[in-house]
Image (cartoon, rainbow, N blue to C red; front, top):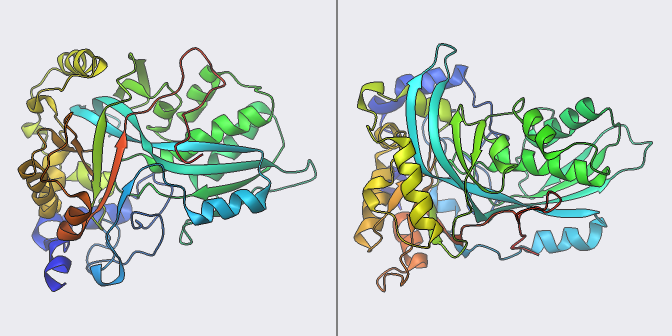
Length: 390
């Protein structure tokens, strides 16, 4: 047990400066302050006194490692369905970055990026109910009891934004069944905000177009815009400029692996060496991924490029150990998603016989989810992502 706890202890020499900077630069796109364990339950504690905001973990002695096939509904969700009499239930998918190139640091302090975003059939569930016209505030609850529930929460901010933009005054009851871990590079909070904008629009008779929602979402955070796409998009700028691309094969299988520690996005960017970026042309990467995965064919492992992976591995060397272990199990393509700390492994047509996901979760002190690509149905703006928990 002591060995597992040391595995996720940050080396002070790697990220002490980053930790101090992140105290001043909280992640503006994160809806939830502490990371949580893989089933969306539990509380987080800091692994060290010097990095309370850079990275946080839950000691192994207080948690059982998790392996889940995405799509299994929880007992708390079933209870809420029976008790709440909600008007609308929507799936809030996570995403992975199939490649992520950092192009340059801009004059405004942001970084120009180019990335292929893809939604997966693993994520959260949101239940919505329009409150009586006399209601003067939203009602919000979640399966994660440490969730921030004030006006900094992205779900509540999305509802406020929708009312301000449309002139509508209706308030809502919202329940969030949380599965997507935070500080994972999976876009959980951004997805929740996008799902909320879509839900409010549906429940109030669609006063806004899809284009309106996409434009408004940019006021909340960079990644939110993506989740209002069809689920596959080439994203540039800060991530808010979308270029739709053809849907990738929904039969594509992958595993998502998350250790009990997180890194905030600003922390990883502060550790980024702009002189060590990949030289791969993002347009060439886009062509390779859409051509091959669109046909259900594997992409060469060398094309899975994430410029944020080296600085994240510098901050938490155990992430590199996870990647190397997955490669040793027979996965050809393994990469960190976004700014981490989750890592995904693309499953070949016939899974490696030696890979036991449950045993891997226990051995490496990580949570593991088996999932697939997903996307919104085409040519139907009223259709959202398929709900694997229905």
